Image (cartoon, rainbow, N blue to C red):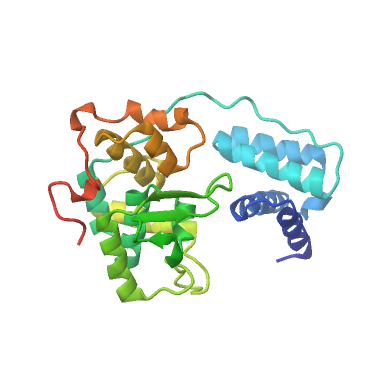
Length: 285
C-alpha cells in the first residue's frame, strides 16, 4: 500500500468512516488513478469531471456506484487534500421503483443444497434464515449466536446500528453441524486464504453465484446474494409476521422500506411458521 493510500485510510479512520466505506473510497480513487495512469494528487478538476462523465455516459454505471465515486472524490480531494475547487454532481436518482426478485422456498432449498461445501451452505442459510446483509454475515462471531434466547446479535450493521434477529431451530442445527466440522476460531466464516480474517464479501457472492448455477436457479443481474435477504422478509410476511417485527429484524430505519415487500408477497400463502425451510419438508441436509 502506497504512503498516500495509507494516509488517506488513516484520515478516514479518524473521521470514523466504516470499513466498507473506506474500502469503497480507496477503490474509487485507485480506479481514477489507473484510468489516467497518474498519482491521484496530480490530477486536475477537469480530469475528475471527465472521469465522472466517462463512468456515467460511457460505462453507464449504476447511480449508486457513481454516487460513491463522487463522495470518494469529495472526501479525498476536498477534505483530505484540502482542494477548494472540487465541483462534481449527479443528476437526481432515477425513480424506477424496481421490485426485488423473490424466490420460492423450494428454489431457496435448491440453492442451499447445491452449495459447494458445508461452510458455504451454512453461510447462505444464515443469510436467508436471519435476513442478514452479506457484510453482516461474513463478520459474525460465535458470541453473536445466543442459542438460549434463539437470537443473533448483529453488531454495527448498516448505519452503525446494533440489532437482534431471529435464530431458527433449523439454522441452529445447521450451525452446530458446521461448528463440529470446522471449529472456526476468530470468525464464524473465516477466509480460506487468510484464516485470521473473515470471508470476504466477494467470496460470499461467488459462493452464491456458483450455488445458483448448480441449482439451475436464475437470478437477474444486479440482484445477487441480497436476494436471500429479500426472500427472508417476503416469506415471513407471507406467514403472517407483522411489518414492524420484520423491520426490526432487517434493521430498516423507515417502515416504508420494509413495506415494499407487500408488493411482492403472495397473500394466498399467509400462515405462521417458525422457519420457511421447515415447511412440508425436512431442513437442508
